[in-house]
Image (cartoon, rainbow, N blue to C red; front, side, top):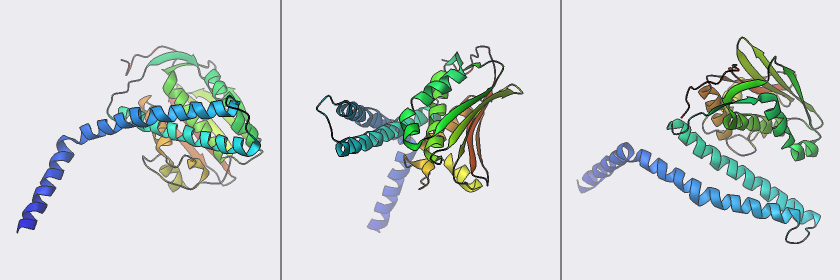
Length: 257
């Protein structure tokens, strides 16, 4: 009898906590990620970068390789933590879009330059094929850059070595589309859907970070812009990742703070 009462009391407390304090617990967890985990990772990244530059003495080839791999791991962890925090804010409507007027082609070009090391190591080339009358659009620059970065990262890391990636930028029916086409292994429709799930674990190259949270967040950003994600895979081993958003050359004030 006592055990039953104790069990019922435990279930009742669990119910009370899940109803009244769940949001508070989530917020506390996000604050821990932001302050107790994100900040130390940044310090680690900066220290490793200084080591690679030789600020603490020159490294031999084996040491440089280990430090480089550790730096890449830290960068992936930083991206995961940042994405989790941003995703929480999106889900709780704490994060609003800030629209500005910018050149989408230039944004893509700049982010391709940032991937120079990855492209060289796999001997991959990226070519942009513009089919737009006007490359200037209104959108949240920071968020759209995050979308471009994530899609480029996944496309480059899944592409066959010594291949060419094509980035198509076009506008049609008042929609701007960015499609990144690479040559890589065919992906089933079920796996394509799973790529954009909240928590997805796979062993394929689309998930070198280890989780699908990055692509999930990309999907949320695009949908926040009233757009849609593009994900297609063909038997001839062509895969396309991209997005469509409403095309406008006028400043939009929707969702702005």
